[in-house]
Amino acid sequence: MWHRRIKSLHGTLGLLIWPWLVMIALTGLYQNHQSAIDPWLPSDMITAEDLQALPAFPVTTPNLTNPEPVTLFGRPAWAEHDGSRGIDAATGATWATGTYLTTWADAQGARIGWRMDWQKLFLRLHRAGWAGDQLGTWPADLAALALVLFGLSGLWLFLAPRLRRWRR
Image 1 (cartoon, rainbow, N blue to C red):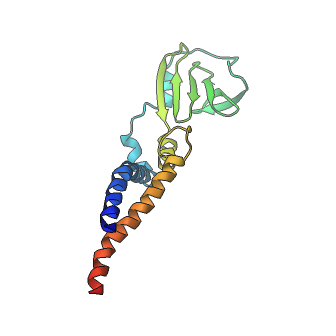
Image 2: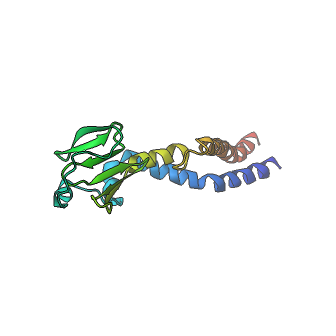
């Protein structure tokens, strides 16, 4: 009777945690081999050549809250103190950095490039199970507990028949 219940529990837990296991395995693989995987991930990162190809639109007074001079691809630019937004002094191209995404726009506001911070996103997915902060790590902690129960029930299912045979 106990064997059936544990087998049923093991099957149910396996069904519930397999998506977590796959996600943890893939994001862990990325963390270990980031440089080999990054070229395969989508990105439209702007380069120094892309900036130089833009028409000149000199900016002398940046529209930023707390601007400080920085160097961007060897060119003068301004950025917010925290680096969240900035503007290229020669072309007026702007960038804005979000939690996982940096977007680039030309002086007229048209998007000209973007870059996903895959490292940050995959680390968050690996740690919490999704990219948001609404529930923190509770679902990942519950999945970890389910994984421990899955392992223990699997150990029981493996050892119980062998122990019965050994006792006979």
